[in-house]
Structures are given as structure tokens and as C-alpha cells.
Length: 320
Image 1 (cartoon, rainbow, N blue to C red):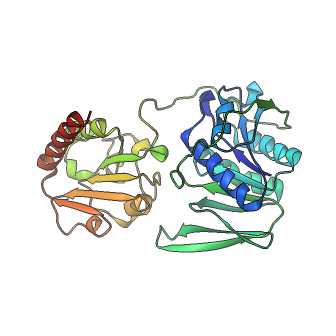
Image 2: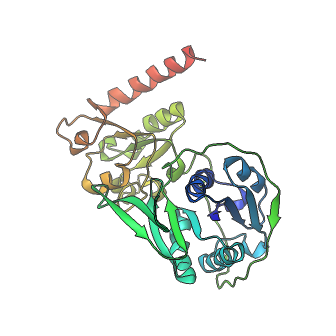
Image 3: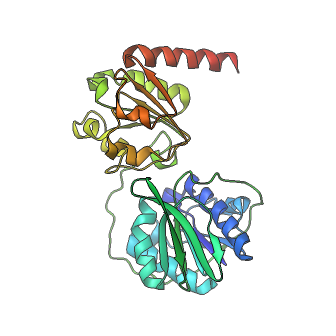
């Protein structure tokens, strides 16, 4: 069996969980076995995971797990892995997945490959899987020979596919102990979180002043996009740090990444170069970002962005 840990923060199934279950079903088909999904906490709606390939949906519904504790979550998930006899565990390569993957590898004595973006292949009883390394400049291939195998899947590496039907959720017990007491949780609400976003509009120091960010917000609103920024912008407190994308921020892989007034330093490129399409708007035609761009506009962003926004609004109005 392939077991997929489907994240459900605040009781809501995440988009990355649907992608992970879709991926888990494909891995299960490769191995000639079944895919099960596991949720942790007392959230509702887990039965919908059956639509995305899970033949079973398990839930550890202890209220003590409603607030995330990496030690408790890892212990509970490892216990369910052993109970079900699953040999492959799939996680999302999210903040949660990153914080429990290492613990799970130790608890299960498992081989772990984090941040995969493609389906594995079989080499006898081993799994071979590829991932990007050196900030996307090379591809490494790993051969996992351990009894238990753990893979964490990059966001937007696969598209969620609804191919089945809802299934009845099975309540299971798991052994866990946690040492963390959560006193308060503050979350960002509204737009799709950056790791899950399919369209991202990002801007840098070329905006000149935080008061100019309105044109970026307007473009994002028109496109239904999530906003992001470069590190210097976040460090200057022009934008909140949770919007910082790059090697030292959040690594993303949206379908469309629009970079406005960002020169394209290597640290920034490392976090966005897996985007499917990159559009760069910059008045400096020699900006490094143009070398990585699929499309580039050399021009004053304060002229280009409003005109682009108006054109998009007209297009949307004429196609509805």
C-alpha cells in the first residue's frame, strides 16, 4: 500500500493534499497496489480524497492533533504506516511536510527523498526518483532500497485529477506524544498561499516606494493571482516576509510567474526557476532575469503594468 498524508490545517483539505493523493495513486498503480490517504485532526470533508485516487481514507481524529506539533504528527503517522503495512509514504513538500519528513525517516528507518517533481520508476524492488538540485541547475537520481520509502512532492509538480468517488472515512487510533502547547495561531487569510498558487505576481525594488504597490495588487486581482516580492523588499518592510520568494524565502513553481522590477539575482531565481512560464517586466534590458524569462518586456513598469492590467480587464470583459 501507498499511504499519503493529506494536510488539513484548520480542518480544511489543502490543494497540495489533492495533488499528493493524485501522485500517490499513480505511484500505487506503478507498484500494483492501492493508495490510501491519511488526515490528522478533527476536520471534515476527508471523504473527498477518494475522488483523487484514495481507495481508503483514514483519519486520526484526536482533538490534541488539531494544532500542529511535528513530534506528535510524525509519531501518529509512523504508527498508522505500521498498522496499515504501507511501504511507501507520500508527503507534500510544504512547511509541514519538511518539518516531519526527517522525523518520519528516523522513526521508520526509511529512505527519504524530499522535493521530488516527477513520478518514480522501478528498479527491482527499489524506487528510482529524480529531483532538481543546485537551485535547479542539475537533476539528481536517487535509488531508494529501504523497506519503507518516503517521498515529499513539490507543490504544482502534478495537477490534481478527480477520477474516483468519495469514500467512507475510517477512524483509526494512533500512538503519539507531543510536548508543544499551542497558545495562539495567526494565519494569513484571503488569497491562495504562495506554495499552492498557479499565478504569482511579484515585484522588487524597481517599485521605488511601498506606496506604489497598488498597481501590483490591481494586476494580481485581475489575474486572480497571489502577490510576492523579492528579499530586499521584504527586508525593507515594504511587504510582509511571508511574500518573500527565493532561495532564502519560499520556493514556488506556479504556472505563471510575473516579475516586475526585479533584477533576477541568482538567489531569487533559485526560488522561482521551476515556474512553467516566467514573464519579466524591467526597464533595464540587461537585467539578468531576462535570460531566464519566457517573455520579457523592456519598459517603465509604471507605464507597462497599468496598460497590461487594462488590456487584461478588456479581454476578460469581452470573453464572459
